[in-house]
Image (tube, rainbow, N blue to C red; front, side, top):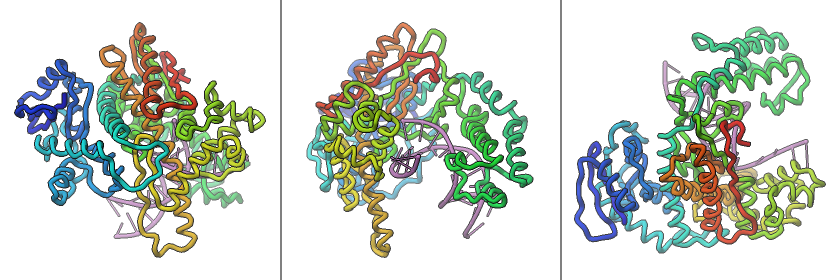
Length: 541
DNA sequence: ACAGACCGCGCC
DNA sequence: AAAGGGCGCGGTCTGT
């Protein structure tokens, strides 16, 4: 069953079957109506934008299983057709469907009233139905510019991509609502231990102030601000040490009495500014960290978050993420996801053999790097992400098919072409305007572009896999008490009652296996997702 | 005073 | 040993 939803006013709107000839209906209580129909039929809900509708449903305790987000779908389909410049809004899509020029873009995302359905400019049912039909047609007969596809893209792939992106938006909304368990008391204690007591009126905590004074004195520069790279560079120059930048990596190689306190200052200052008391006050409430997730926000299909830096939770504060009493956290990340995706896409048997029995980097190290796992890892990552490394020749001999795929992706990009992920997510075209560039500039731009497309194939296909896995896991967990509470590229955290932990762990493993089949088909090596049950996130790995 | 660029660093 | 992809964010610096 397929039902279009078009809100018209706070919690009111129209509904229309799209797969049966039935008259449209209206309701003045969308949440209740949707909840009732959901329980009876579990339809696929078709709406313009998940964020503006589902947030309110979730807040009202209503959840749905399946959806089709027209904006997400439009974005994927426009990308596939190489039409990145065009608006993916339903209004624009509707206008295109009627052969009209799209309306001017509304101002960037107006803040939505948390208790109301956002109805400003909501497209009518007619638009929902029409755009959905156009999208179904586009999926059934994909047409787009020539592009390098490691796997052939057809209706099945595009449909799966859209379904996963739509489910991703559902999951994103639910996860923002549920939140990640976060113990403010533990976090606060951790901060006080590291920084000294919380300063009363802002300002530097005691330990930072102390370090700042040590640095200033070691460089004979009173009042030196360690937060200012320019000041630090000048002070070192005065002391006879010329530095190209103040990166920690670089500083570690310098011998000078100011270095040690400066490095400690940098680390603690980072903790204070990025995940200190201010962060705690603005992002943690009622024992939960609630960032705003945005599914498939990055061109590669990776998720983003707005506010709170949820995808960069430093290891140093993960001890504050603790399961509720009687509950556990199931922490699962895909081991070496990207090289495994490369092995799968290229069908490289030797690489598959290395990955099949566990640690791919260790196996590669045994074969070609005298057991040096670190060197093997860096070599392979470097090959995937772009660089010319000494290890490349070794890898070329060892995994010829995998390296050939990477090379083809890079050559395509250098020549100005497009590449697509396993599910057909298409990279944006390069920036126009090669005229007027010097020879050097255009060579550099071409190389940059090659690195981007080389990485895109892998990163976007890995995001495809993770997105499908998350959608499947979400469905498997529905009906149990276990809940998704965190997702970060290739890692999930599920918060579950202890007695449901085994079952949820199994759901995680199954979701990964099924995602592998759906996204990559037969693979030369599995892409396992191994859950660990812990009380505290810091014990996850 | 404010906006946007740049820096540096956290995560994958 | 070295350094290539994608982000978000808070700080400083620069231009208006």
